[in-house]
Image (cartoon, rainbow, N blue to C red):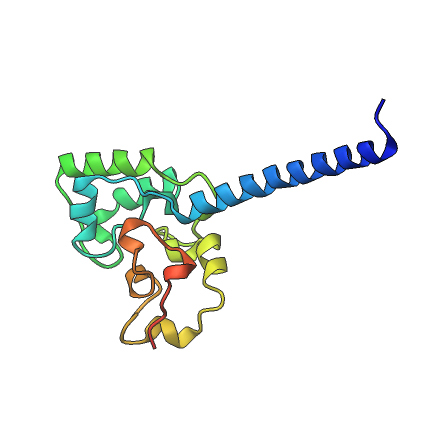
Length: 164
């Protein structure tokens, strides 16, 4: 039978090990979030990336991407139409890799804008209004102006640089 001192050591060891496991899991989740790899598709990258950063599919829901893809002839003031084969491939790619988490919270605009999702608004609440209209940034949709890794889907704060 264990002495009282041995029992205390045992209890302390169990608590420390439990905490180490919990912190290890949290660190793994945080690392996975920071190093998220964006699904890739050559047609999506070429077509969407010819005008802007090809926004990672996880930033909008499948339904919102469907809406974007069915209105390309009036895509935020431009005609971004693509041929039927490219449109079908891009649409399938976006829906297959669409967001299913907090980042893809429903956009509050029609057509859906990534910059109106609750996630985007929350993440950028500290950015002062003049930053959005500076010559280096121009608009909230210009992710690459502040996030060097935006084209790779890397929006980590450690690589963030807000131009002045």
